[in-house]
Image (cartoon, rainbow, N blue to C red):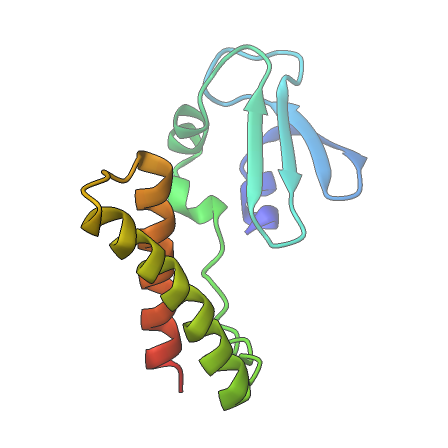
Length: 134
């Protein structure tokens, strides 16, 4: 895509690896003020030093803003580390103690503060994850 984009611009010059300067097509530019950079992942960054937006720039050369972003490459899902059943049970045991402490406080009619409620929610989420672990 970078070559297609550069071919539509005037006075293009390289300013480094995958970096260019050109006249901005979105305004009457006689001296290059548009910076173009292709990132390692293929994304193209545009910056007009006169203040034109990237949407104005791509619109002026007849491409879509989505053309600046390559299609996502689908990679294999990362391999999850396998846990031993004893590790999962130990995590459930620990998080259950948090739940038990909260229950004791509530039984004594002591309200849980926001920090305690957040920790209780985290314990619940961790127990659910452990139970659902495959």
